Length: 127
Image (cartoon, one colour):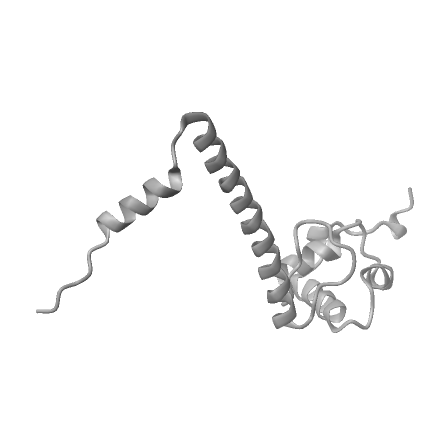
């Protein structure tokens, strides 16, 4: 192994250098691979890890092909759409649970909840 061709470990790069590489990537002029070749950065996910740590954009922990969204509003909309999908899935599970509990145990959960809410809710009286 030649000493002159070794690639420094991730820890060997300065924070200023890492930030510079992330800024170049976020400007969109070069891909992560191009930057890795330009600066001789080793590792498959080194630049991505730097982006997560020093970047101004959102970098998901899950693998999503393509670049992160640069428009924060579009990015936020995408996150909210994901949360909405998850909430809808939970609702389907809860509705199924209510249906099964009514069928198996004869308990009408919705009716019981509505009764308890109306009993506990007291309008404030004017003084």
